[in-house]
Length: 293
Image (cartoon, rainbow, N blue to C red):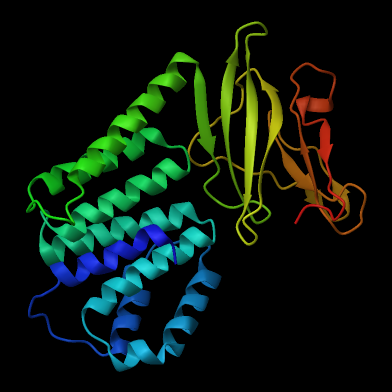
């Protein structure tokens, strides 16, 4: 479980002291799976593993109480984060916000903390605009809560200041950040595009983070005249037609393919517009001794 989620559980104990009817552990698990997880995409394996772990947790079953429902919700969010499924994690945070407002009201410790964690996840993928917006909402709620050791109003203000500063630096340097919402070949992929005034294009830096091993590396992605669309849901091309590797769509900064047919995918990148490569696709091949994971 993500370490930055652990403080939430302590907060739940503080905020959950009401007289709601107690559910059995199985009822809590079933409620989380059937209701809280509605709308996630491509998370079947994550959900199955979560249910398997929850069913095997004999200690939690013995000491089940209403607070554990919230703990299970945040554990499921953490599992989606570990799997690199950022969009599903954010979707569950949205569900948690609805739950928190319904159970405890708009001004509550859980509501403020959920906004805070949602902001941190946006920051992690380089979406500073949404990160700032979420933390501003968190700060608004914390401002109306009692001032104590679990009130993170000052931390929220510092987070906003830091993100605004980073955003200003990027704007001054004409840097655009982007990310792919779904993992690709077991990698979460993000990047930055730096304006190149000399050639009137953008230089791309791509960062790959393996969701199983934690391996992370960055590579030069080449240049683009900005014909490609860098938004919050970048498409990844399907390059295979049986044993034939097809050229991807125009302006794709990278793709994986088994070019030497050894059963291991290579990373093809270094997009070079008007540089002679067919359809301006990547021209540089990255292959380690063991191949790409």
